[in-house]
Length: 321
Image (cartoon, rainbow, N blue to C red):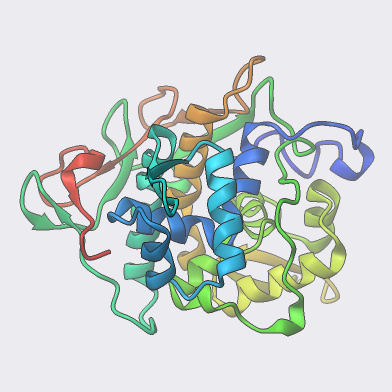
């Protein structure tokens, strides 16, 4: 993947105006860059509706659960429906916006099944109802059907793009570094390394765009240095990044995506797909994406690896997820 406005040549974010409002991608990273949000949506997509459904299926405190459900309602991913007045009881129903997150969850599931063998629980199979097979979907170009790989998709900033607007704002309190791993890490543990902190996903996205050195991550994304150091260490520990000493400068090192990290491309790409649908900007797209294989404007789709048909949300069995 080529960089959107070469990060080594573009003006550093630290030197740009701080008043810029996050664009749709920055808003999306802020919304999904929370350790519980995707897990709650996973429960909702697999049939959970009532407060007790979420509480019983996740090791989450009442305070955190109430806060996250309230935010998902305010962001339009869930709708609170009162089904009993005395005593008042509610259920949380997926909206079209919330339901459409399924490609991201499916991409996460595929990546975890492929790369993470040390789950504390079995990652359940997912069946494609159209052909009846258990599947590991592939990410392809919607125009030509060809494989969508990091090296086959070129990027450039659109009218609403730029590093200064594409990084997330804070929405939830950052967990202290000494407090240990969250219980949510037991679910999709390596994915939580990427999405469990609002900075991790955008750091990985920047790596796909060609950013490699600590000082460049710091200059273009402007995270607090201690947070950047923690995130890079965590990503290296999970073997998503590898730290490589430069031959010509032994005092310098780069953080490069491993094969495991590069395979996160469909996950990050589906985040962009979802963001473009639900958080579009009036001045135009955040990113311009081109599939070099066919030359078309890139839009991604998930394809069944057995029957090679495009996967639709109503055609997958999530009952065991």
